[in-house]
Length: 429
Ligand SMILES: Cc1cc2nc3c(=O)[nH]c(=O)nc-3n(C[C@H](O)[C@H](O)[C@H](O)COP(=O)(O)OP(=O)(O)OC[C@H]3O[C@@H](n4cnc5c(N)ncnc54)[C@H](O)[C@@H]3O)c2cc1C
Image (cartoon, rainbow, N blue to C red; front, side, top):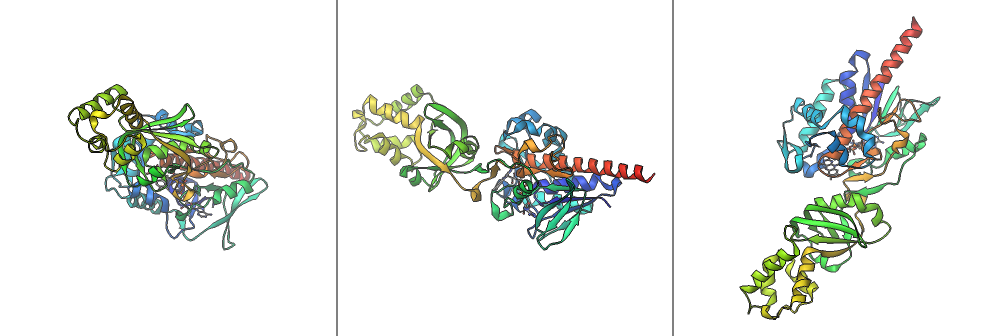
């Protein structure tokens, strides 16, 4: 009997398993999933803060492609083959009702990521996928240049014509993704590009940033610059922590500027009032001052900012906090405008893999066929999901990468089995 062996029971592996088993019946294909954890989909469980942002309901594939940061063109076949719409239909068919939220983010109506895992498990069970838990794969076995199977940590050898490596990346290693797939790839002659944590908090140098720990800002604009060159600018939500900044627009920034941050410090700026031009902001400040001419600066300026930010703005402005408003000079007002439109910080680095949402870098896409996900070096070996050198911004796009590449790897593996079966039939005639 022909076998497809899937290494890793995460998003890409489970999707590959369902697709291979449901569509491989006519070929008599046996589909096995090997997962080293005690259960499937541990990382899916923590996605979207436990709600699982399963995909993005953006208009078309081009928009999906535009949201991928590394090697977007590699994904054309995968995304066109299994689109975000098809992913949504798939989960609805699994009995998981979905809803679309701000930014086209798609979640289960229940707000429970466990429903996504259960939906996939139900489909796998129905399609008779053979699931092996507590089964760590140690090696991908090759014979005469072709895949011949896998070896488990206990030494057992399982033979199969196709192996799909869906072992994930290095982020949140506590979920099981400890980078084993990179080793398998290297051992079988594939290049692995530099591995960097991405979609990760950024570290800031200044003590006043650390003091703002817990402050959450909405409707602000965060930008990152290298000298005069602006590298990133995004509007949205961010937070301050004891080591720097985090939140959606900061995480996205990390995927654009992370590699550069490994070599030098960059400047971060927050526009606290992006809806107002400098002139409009000045008018706003003057209005505030007009009504409070005899009050002290510290008691008036607070109207413009969240309470924990006010003392920091006062400190950075250099204005005497007790100065009466009527004595505030134009230069001092300009300084307040500067701080409000470009609240500064020195970015010194990124958080670690254990707090990264995704791994940047991975199995080089130059060694994998984008139309099949099959290795260009070893026939019968496929890669899917985060193990590949692919990463996208937040919004459900990274899971879409896992679903689509898992689907394509399974579809291509079935095609390989069909060709092998036909060749065998011809030989027997
Ligand atoms: C906190 C957090 C929140 C996230 N939220 C979202 C979100 O809301 N939306 C989104 O699109 N993306 C999100 N992501 C990213 C998303 O989870 C990943 O892109 C996705 O899970 C990658 O799928 P994968 O199947 O490639 O890898 P994984 O899901 O990591 O699965 C890999 C599996 O392989 C197993 N494995 C590894 N090595 C072996 C081995 N040697 N033998 C057997 N099994 C092995 C692992 O145990 C694991 O179960 C989030 C990530 C994190 C960390």
